[in-house]
Amino acid sequence: MANDPALGDLAQLRDIVRQFVDERDWDQFHSPKNLAAALTVEAAELLEHFQWLHNGRPEELGPAKLVEVRHEMADVLVYLVRLADKLDVDLLGAVQEKMVLNRAKYPAEQVRGDARKYHEYKS
Amino acid sequence: MANDPALGDLAQLRDIVRQFVDERDWDQFHSPKNLAAALTVEAAELLEHFQWLHNGRPEELGPAKLVEVRHEMADVLVYLVRLADKLDVDLLGAVQEKMVLNRAKYPAEQVRGDARKYHEYKS
Amino acid sequence: MANDPALGDLAQLRDIVRQFVDERDWDQFHSPKNLAAALTVEAAELLEHFQWLHNGRPEELGPAKLVEVRHEMADVLVYLVRLADKLDVDLLGAVQEKMVLNRAKYPAEQVRGDARKYHEYKS
Amino acid sequence: MANDPALGDLAQLRDIVRQFVDERDWDQFHSPKNLAAALTVEAAELLEHFQWLHNGRPEELGPAKLVEVRHEMADVLVYLVRLADKLDVDLLGAVQEKMVLNRAKYPAEQVRGDARKYHEYKS
Image 1 (spheres, helix red, strand yellow):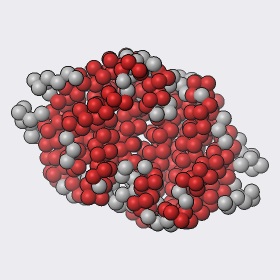
Image 2 (cartoon, each protein chain N blue to C red):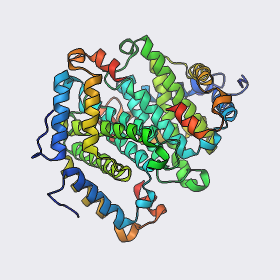
Image 3 (cartoon, rainbow over the protein chains, first blue to last red):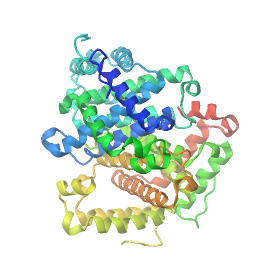
Image 4 (cartoon, rainbow over the protein chains, first blue to last red):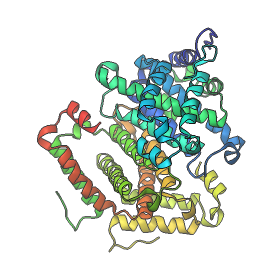
């Protein structure tokens, strides 16, 4: 498994996933559309663990479910990293860029701790 | 914005998101359950850009949609990193652990390039 | 708009959607795969209205949000009815068939009012 | 199982689901928020069957998968009908109301058979 400490985490993950896919000749199934669908499916499988819980904190989830949740989170990240690879998106840069937009959209002094405002702003 | 090059990408992202949330006093809304729902909603907003396309490759998507897709991918990663923070999950370790399981579940020599098998294995 | 009171609700809905699609020559985009993606996207848009709320009951939602929720629910049903039309699925029969399976899987006397059991059974 | 032919399909479904839930004392878990999450999870489970296929038509899906798809569609409808019951939403009326809005938003003569326009209009 490729694992170069000089690479950032996300580049390492990209290489790990790339190698896994290449060994199986699965790139042919990885259109961005299919990957976006698979990513959504994995996110929903993650949500499934929480749907009937109050808040899903570790003490409510329990250790066995927490392991499953951890694996579902890994699946989400694998598909996200793969989609980024196929679309040539730099994920770290994308988040930094998006956070600038979010800071403009949700000024701290206007939205602080206000659930209603938070909700309205988000929707 | 926190940005320490000595930290890995994912730890940097965790700190960026943590600071953004703290400035707005939004931690109170961030139960794992709510974050899992928000992650799924963002994944579906990403999928929405692809739903009527053939494959969603950059040439079909076009440059304007690609920017929007990039931002939706950032949103997905933000909620995933935030959920990992709240559940104390090491995302890089979780993917490495999951890939070991995936390698056992989908042996390269058995599933290579076979769409039907791929599908059966996945489902 | 087709509206035959002798038809059941679901057959009426099928005809309403069919006519809308035909007038726009949109059947060409309605592969089952695309419709399943669109259905998931609409379900997530519905979920978005609830993601930061406590329970989403009408008094918490408020009248304006309730109208939006009502419309998102309509969108979900439209895509579900359209998918059923394309796959020749009788939705009423499918639910009746599934409820027989559910009754066998979740015997009332074993799962009554037990959140933990309910959750375990569901996952 | 309640089954009154004088009721419309959707009212029949509401009664079938209501009885199933009451027998298990599960109403306590059915906040609108939880139901919206469960609906999204079921929609994604439906999508999962299609994610690596070309178009998901019955001949590509095959008879065994079609049965599973039929059951996932039933699950989606069950949660939608249950959510409608909890929010006192008339689903047939909601679709009729939404279709009027859709007809205004997507005039047939402007959007006919144009994938690009269709996509732009939808997004």
